[in-house]
Structures are given as C-alpha cells and as structure tokens.
Amino acid sequence: MTETVLAPLPNPGDQGSCPFDLPPALDRWREEEPVRRIAVESGGYAWLVTRHEDVRAALADGRLSADRGLPGFPHLRADEPPMPPGTFSQYDPPEHTGIRRMLAKAFMPKNVEKLRPLIRRTVEELLDDMAALPQPADLYHDFALRLPTLTMCELLGVPFSDREVFQENTKKILNLGLPGAEVAAAYGRLLAYLGDLIDAKADEPGDDLVSELAVARVRTGELSKAEAVGAIALLLIAGHDTTATSLTLGTLALLRDPGRLSLLLTRPDLVPAAVEELLRYLPGLHTGVRRIATADLEIGGQTVRAGEGVIMALNAANRDPRVFDRPGVLDFTRDRAGRNSLAWGHGIHNCLGQSLARAQLQLALPALFDRFPGLRPAVPFEEIDFRENALFFSVQRLPVTW
Image (cartoon, rainbow, N blue to C red; front, side, top):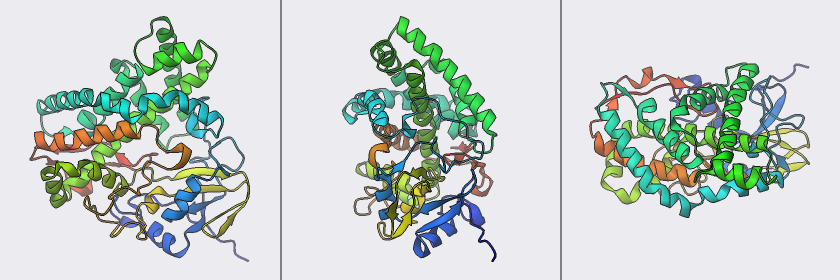
C-alpha cells in the first residue's frame, strides 16, 4: 500500500496567488476537509483547523496546550530552540495566568488611552522626518518600524538608542529560514542585553514596565530574573514587529484599493472599523497558532488524540464565508466589520498588546495619508520584496514616493 504524502501548510503567494489572497489550498481545504492532517516542518503531522467556528473553539479549549516542550508539539523548524523562561505565550495556566497578570495593567485600554497624545506626537515627528528624506523613502524602516519601536521603548523603559540590538536579533528570531543555532544565539544576545537592563533598572528605577518588574517582582522573589527577561523579550519582539508589519501591509492594501482609501479619508468615524477589517484581511500570522493535545478531544467532528499537534489557521478562519460576506474583499462598512476577526487570537492567549496596537494603527494610517496625499509605491506590486519566510508575513522594504 502506498503511504499518503501529506501536504505542508501553504504560504501567502503559493501557487502564484497574490500574497494578500488566501492560498487557494486553504480555501479548498476549509470547504472540503476543515480539519485535516498536514505535514509539519519539525517532522510528522498535525491537525490543521481552518473554519472560523472550529478555530475559535480550539483557541479556547484548555485541552490544547501551548507548552512547546511537550513531545509531539508541531514546531516551525526541525531544530527549534527552547523558548526562554518567562515566555508566557508558551505557558499554560496557572503559570501563564500569573505572569500575564503582572503585565496586563500597562496594556489595559484605559491606560493605553493615556498614551494616545504621545503616539500622536510621535507619528507627526516621524512623518516630518520622512518628509525630509530623499525619495523614494522606505515606508517600512523609515516610518512603520520606528513608530511601534519608539512606543514600546517608552512603555517598557528600553532606550531607543539601543534599537539595533533588539531589531536585528528579532529579525533573526522570527526568520524561519535560519538554523536553530542562529536563532538561539540571537535570543542569547537579546536576553543578555535585557538582563543588564533589568539590573540597571533595579539600581535606578524609572516610571516604566521594566523598572516595575525589576523592583516589585524580581527583587521580591515573585518572579525570577530569567522569567522577567523572557517576558520582556516577548513583549518587545511582538510589540514592535507585528505592529510595523500591520501598518506597512495595511498601507499597501489601501494603496491598491483607492475607493476604500477615499472612504477612509472622508469618513474618520470608520477608522476603528477599518483597522479591524485590515487586520482580518491581511495574512498576519500565516504559520498558524500551534498547540498540542493533552487529552482526546473533538474538533469539527474530527477526533484528535492526546499527543497530536493542532494548528489553527487564523488566516483561513478570517476568510470563512460562513462568517464574512465576500471575505476576500476589504469592506469597512460591513455589518460588525472586523468584530468576528481572530487576528488578535481568542481565549486566554489573545494578544495582550492589542489595545496599544489598535491605538497606533488608528492614529498612524489617517495621518500618513493626510501628510502624503500622493503617496504611492515606487515599484510595481510584483517587484515588492515580501518577507515570506518569517513568522509574521511582511515586506523586507517598501519603497514609496509622494
């Protein structure tokens, strides 16, 4: 009997599709076999879940563990290095609950609202800087990456002047094409830097999150230094890279849809809905949310056994026609636009920094087009260098002129 060869998880742009479109295989699988086995990069197989209802339920199911150290976990690479202590996104309760609670206050909506004046000033200053650059400028590096980097540095208490340390190492950590040893080395450099920062903040604390962890958590023994460093690393990596990606690709998506852009600029009341809809529409975390079953369970009518891996395809769920009318179309006026999106995740592991990311995108997108009404890509769409071999789909650079 011939053994069936399992297909791998497709990437944006596979089979010649537009990178903003859902890979055709995912569209087909969601309709024909919404819970199916696929080949995993680390070897073996995992169950891929593609329908919105099933993905949402799986994300909230406590029998699916985020612990990457468990046997059978569907890793993104064969030589995946272990995550640092304190990487709470890879923890289950009660460990996850405890660390997340220590960090949550800074990211609460009411506290993020207090940061809006700072974010607004930062946006304006960065646009001033960009306007002074020779054209074409690089929207990704000259604006989109700098905004969340400055914001996270302010919130965490990380010197912006040290940004190359964490930006360059983050790029390596998120690069799925690098050997695990290089990823581990990049983590090591970042953790060493943050460890020194915690020590400095313990001696001279400021009004920032790293200082709070150093004084109120590490010094009291509530959290080890290694755990604090790992938690800060996670916030720093996720907090600047994902927002930069969303801002860059969101801008590009609007430039490719002049009618939708015009609507956004003439209807400021649509900005919050537009941000949610863009995040639903963009590829985002195209590698899926990965878990391992700790008990037998059923997902979408399929039995998943304890010890089997599960991958929740957020991009497929966010294009499910059962939930979104014309899912492949940007529509800021759709009923409850973006409300059912799973771009922020769901359940106990939903994105901790989503309120901060929302605020930055809501302020940055209209301001960018107000300042540069003639903004346009400086190269054809087909020549844009997309960053496909990374955890979060993005671009290497985006040359623009105005």
